[in-house]
Amino acid sequence: MAPRERRIGRPVAKPAKNHTPKLIANMTNATVHRPRRAWLSALLLAPLLTLAAPLAHADALDNIAKSGVLKVAVPEDYPPFGSVGPDLKPQGYDIDTAALLAKSMNVKLELVPVNSANRIPYLQTNKVDLVISSLGKTPEREKVIDFSTPYAPYYQGVFGPADIKVANPADLTGKTVGATRGALEEIALTQMAPNATIKRFEDNNATIAAFLSGQVQLIAAGNIVAAAILAKNPPRRPEPKFVIKNSPCFVGMNKNEPRLQQKVDAAIAQAKQDGTLNTMSKKWFGAPLPADL
Image 1 (cartoon, one colour):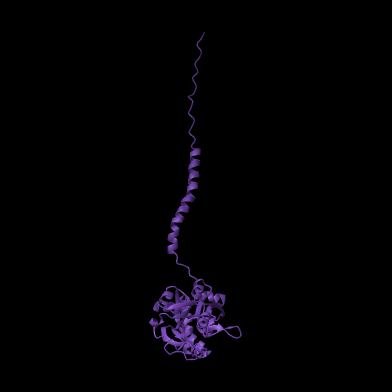
Image 2 (tube, rainbow, N blue to C red; image 1 turned 120 degrees about the vertical axis):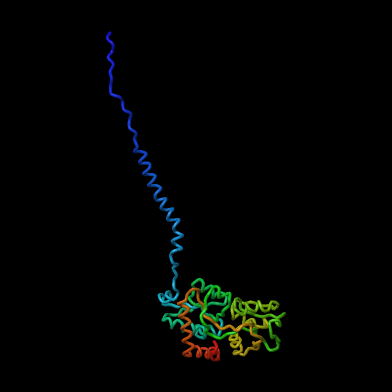
């Protein structure tokens, strides 16, 4: 038998490697990671951009002009600074001062009744634009709000009947003194007379009522308040014993509002110069405005 012929064919070529899946995977990974990297870069840069950008600040005077309303915190139980008149409308030196400032800004006036304890919180929470409420200036208050130039005379003291002999804080030992919580005289007297029994009341009417009824022997209050009590000729007359502090009144406003502060100061200066404040002082305090105010 003839040997079977051996066939010699072409060499079989190895199949070429397919790089397409790997290429697609690389492209997919690049696509997936690119936005992640961009997001991380933006996240890292954000604090730097925040520091570089100037802080936006809403200007209080512009806001008042845009709204067309000046909101002012005023007392309603502290004559002659602020009280409710026979016609049930607010009246007093602080009310007239608020109207004067609103007129200088050419806006409407909105009065917001407050007491000694809540007047500064109302300002800090933007419930009001200004506080005109027989507000005295203290280092503690200067840390949280700013003040205008003085617009009204005022001093705090201890007052009581003639038969109670008191000449200084040391004489208050063993005696009861009524004071309005949060008022400047209450804060100062607490430090000056640690041995006195101070009974604190939530508003001025309650403090005055406690003195007139004999619930307390003496009253810590402003000279204007004592004068208003005396004008009614009560059986218990609050005669001056000693001065706690001479403290004229200022308009309070939020910190870092230089344009509003300048506007208020300019209006007060004009009212002093043209005699408006002097007329108001005679009307409500029964005395001319002090020359050194």
